[in-house]
Image 1 (cartoon, helix red, strand yellow):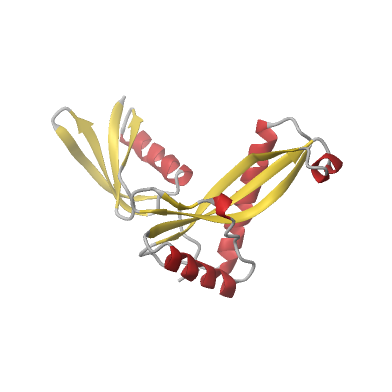
Image 2: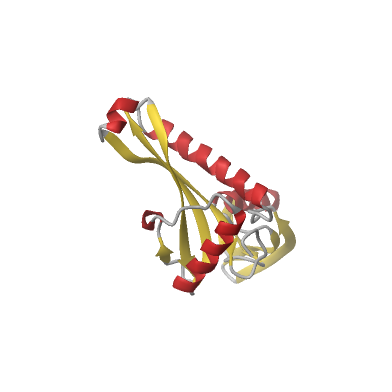
Length: 187
């Protein structure tokens, strides 16, 4: 098993372990989708005791930013479904309900500058969404990534939930929706 360094043109380098080059590219694709690494040109190098050995340039099949309001809505819908599935696999409660979708943001160092708990909700119209992103960038000028985060709470029943007898954040999922320097629906 060898370790390979993948250096995407639009994101930070990462490593994968694989038996051969084909498996390394496959592992890089999986990693890119799971970690919202942007799609695009990348280099593949085998890490050796003597340093990185360049193997190939390739097109990384990774995450793509939404270019239209419809694409953003589809991403959010899929993210809500992943959050619901997360809740169903982490709790035995039969009743699950959405906490909504909020925005989270981070700076170039990976520090959270806006967390989902700050309750900047994802807007319901493109015009409002663009205004919110512009405002977020005014308040947090070091922002380089914006995520949409879906959350799910669970309870024994709707009645229990209405009475406040619930388990919060039993499921969550995030999707990268904006990246500084990249064209997307919010620009």
